[in-house]
Length: 151
Image (tube, rainbow, N blue to C red; front, side):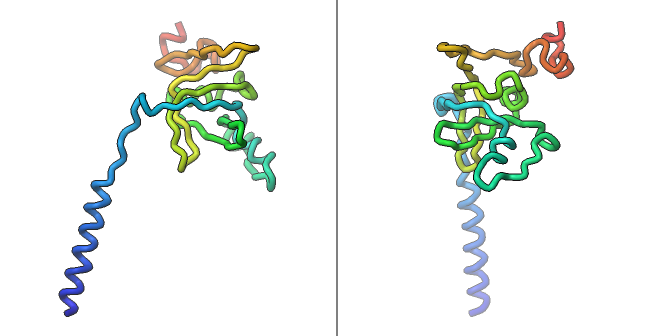
């Protein structure tokens, strides 16, 4: 009887592993992009200013990494890749209204940026940057810029 129970438990474990292995997530696609509107803010400062106030120490550790504050008060973090890195670190766009086209990962409160526009006066202006390094010529004294941007 104990042997049968052990076999049963083993089979359940195997089927559980197989079921989990088959439950793969699909890769995001361009058709899955959404538009997000809000304001670019320092995530740490925003957390410090919430009820209860986090001890974010954003000057010391996160260097005022930026995210999106939606109109409903939700604070989103950006995926730190070539396109997201410049938005996370570009102080020129802090406190500006923005529309982002990208992919949302709601369980993690992250947005992966595909492209974005800034509100300048009454107009929405596409904010473009180098597709290789993600920076504009002149950013970071060109220390992070690719060879093409440095020229």
